[in-house]
Image 1 (cartoon, one colour):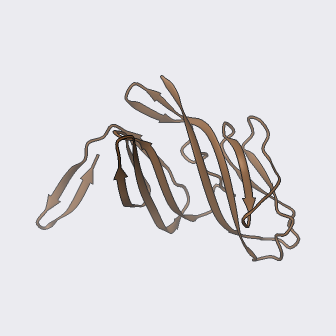
Image 2 (tube, rainbow, N blue to C red):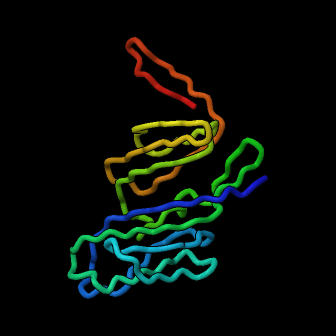
Image 3 (cartoon, rainbow, N blue to C red):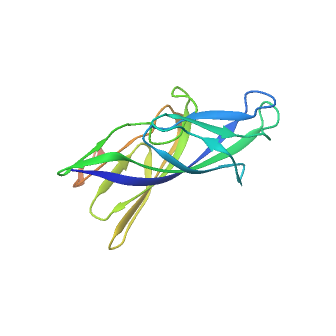
Length: 171
């Protein structure tokens, strides 16, 4: 019965909605700890209080309304609990930073887990590579969706269909 430590890097492409923006606020699960933040490639000041989901990022040079920017957040936390062969997420969407829960976005996700554990996620799996210690899978959602989540566990793949029936892979 272990809480699994997770490290992550999220890169968000965004546009400012106001002129002269000084700070932006995004949501990130209250249990996550932010290690560093960069705005448009430069390290910047940020604040996230303990047990608080609000992450405030200083962006003094946000420019005018509609200007495009990149926000990069490095963070860590334990939001996955292992109970026997089960992996339980304490949050299905709070594990990545997001501006508003109802906003839609495309996602490009890469997961690294110990070999033997399988990850399945939203979107299409673009690649899967494994070595003796680590499995890396890459998933892409190329049309905007509201939330991204994933499952992990000890799964076996089974293919069904063929002939006139569509081919389906189940875990």
